[in-house]
Each structure stands twice: as structure tokens, then as C-alpha cells.
Length: 477
Image (tube, rainbow, N blue to C red; front, side, top):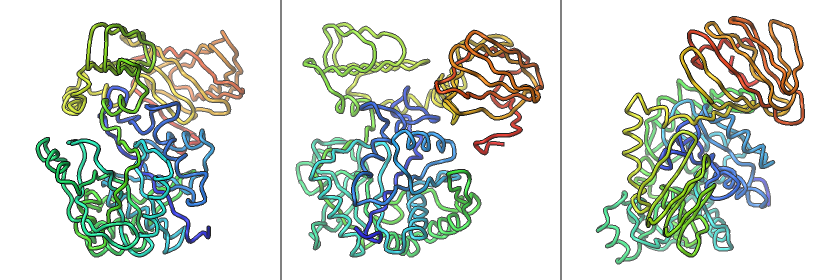
């Protein structure tokens, strides 16, 4: 296939949703979690758009907080990306897709066709899926803006709906109207009437056509996206969209800004398997279940229990004599509720976020990932803190110092190369070193296995913001 005919995948990976709390949190949301298999949802999306002649290398749009997660997970798959575009502020899907279209035209040409995909959906890729992709791409090349509509399997209140209009050449149809997430009665009536599909949030768009419609229907979005990409700068392997320009874009979805107004909108009704994993009951539906309808991930024992979802990455869970139950266990929080009412978790998370005592439970996990590895909190006390650090082979932390704390490192596994005020020391298992307050220090892993060590911090202030970076290979100085 000629380069100008290749489809450019655009993967939106900046969402911070917490509907799958307590595993999904703002610092590591669901797209980066392995919820249905051994790979994360983002990695599954990447694999879906590689290994076929249809696609050019994927463009990923995310925010700066997730840039290293995106780069690391892409590297783990061995899939080369066409670019990682960093949104400096969240401005919803209209501005994000417009920015991707501007970048794609610059690097792939004005006739580029974009396949816009969420990074956290589960999709079945049988022959019907690939036929739908080809049909949508052909329609997009004629100047239509195509949205994929999933033929409904039930009266779902968690999705928006599209009413399918008159048929157009090439297997697509006009969009008669969009309907926001309906109540149960409205959903039942639409299902009974027929002619409605779920709004999947997936699109096939000609980049030039989309920008033309954005300029006409949402000029502020168009101007901010074009200027933001035009003034973007390269930072390591990332493209940072200009903040001052991009921030001027309205916070509006592509549905509201473009699709509900344009005369070019088309819908392709499809029947391939699709789920947005919007709540824990959707995860239950995707996982393998036993004869009693139970889906289990992690260490658990279930007895006299049916239609249950049990997920634990920390500790053994025992459930006895219950039906329609969900138990999700993370390192520092547990959620228990009716599986059939999993959609109600949103207000609960908002309540936790509003309370200073529980806010951190919605933001960070006990284990925090960094581009060099990460750390887990083990024990906190008055003027001391204990952490477990893990450093990937060949990686090193920034050269840094602290004004308020001293640190003591004990190597548990691997080899550590420690720099303290210019002096380099190599430590192996069971060896330790003391880092006094104010010293310039750096930790590196020169070995071929993961370095693991215990860090004991002592001092008057132990916050993560007491870090003065002097030098950093990840551009964080």
C-alpha cells in the first residue's frame, strides 16, 4: 500500500478516569493497567494497529504526567511509534484530534486518513472488524467524517446513542441525531424501535477534511490546535504542544464541537465485539468466568458464591455465600459492592477525592512508577519513612540533593552504583551507604538484572517536593 493511502492511527491516552477505582487512579489510569490479560489496554490498542499493511506508525496523544508510561509500555511491545504528542492542558477530544490532524498533515501529507481510537477499549479483531476499518477508510477518503456505531446488545444507560439515518454510498449512513446517555426507559424504547447504535468514540477522518470543518464550526479550537502544534518543541522522544496556544482551546468534545453540527458526519453500524470497560461489571463480562459466573484474578477462594468479580494484587481474598458481588483489592484500598451497581462508583470516588484524608487514594498507588523504575512506601512514622526502590537495568536516577532529609540505602538485590558528592561507590547485596542531608547524590543500576534496595529516610520533612535535581537524563531538571 502506498504511503499516502496508509491509515494513521491516533491513540488518545490522556484520560484520568477513576471508574475502575481502586486499581485505576489519576497517576496510573485504566488504560495502563492489564485488566483483561497480561498486557495493558494501551498495549493491546497498539498491537491492534501494527502488523498490518493498513497502518502507518501510531500517533499517541497523552499528557506530560503519562509520557514515560506511554514510552515504556510501547517499548515493551517492541512497536515503533510515529510520535508521542503531549497535551500541556486537558482540552477534551476536539482539540486533541485537531492537534493530531495538524501533526499528521505535516508528517504524512494532506491526504492522511486518521483512525482515532481510545486507548482503554476492548475490541474483537475478526474479519468483520477489518472489513469495517476498510469501509470507514474508503468513506473518509471521499470527504466523510465517519463514526463507528456499535449495534446495541442491551438497553445500556452508560453509553451515548446515534440514530442511523439514510444510507450513503459505500456502506455508511447519515447521522440522524446524537442522544446523550439515556435513562433506562429511553434506552429500552430506542432498543425496541431499532435504528440506534452505541456511540463508540472511534472515528475515521480525513485530516484535511476534519480541520476544514473544525475551522468552520469551531474556529477557536482550530486556531489553538494549529498554533499549538506549529510552536511545538521536541523534548527527548516527545513532542510538547505549546501550552500558551493550546490552552486557548475550549474544553469541548468532538461530538459537540463537530459531529453534531457538520453535514459530513456518517455512521458505520458494526457488530464486532466492543467494550469501553466503563465499570467493574464490564470487566467481569470480559474475563473468563467459571460455571457459577465467577471471575477471579489474583489470590482468592470462593465458596457458595455466584456472579462475582474478585481481583486482588495484594493479599488473599475469601468470599463465602454471596451473589452479585465485586471485591477489588489494591495495595492500600479495598472496594466491595454489588456488581450490578458498579456504575455508581463515580460519586464514591468524588467523595474520597473531596476529603483530604482520602484524596491520595484516588491519585496515587502505594507503588509509584518512574521512568527509571519506581518505589513503594513500606512504613511511615514521625520523622522517618521506609521505601522499597527498584531500578531497571541500565537506568539511573537524577543527580539530586535534599535540604531536609538524610537517606540510608541497603541493597537487597543486584548491583548499585552510588555517587555521593562526586565519589562513586559500587555496592552489592547486603551492602549499604549513608547519604547525609544536602549531599549531591545519584543512584544507578549498571547491572543486567533489576536493582532492588531499601531506603530509610530521616529528617524534619520527607515530602517528594524536597528534591533539587541537578542533572537528569529524562529532562526533569
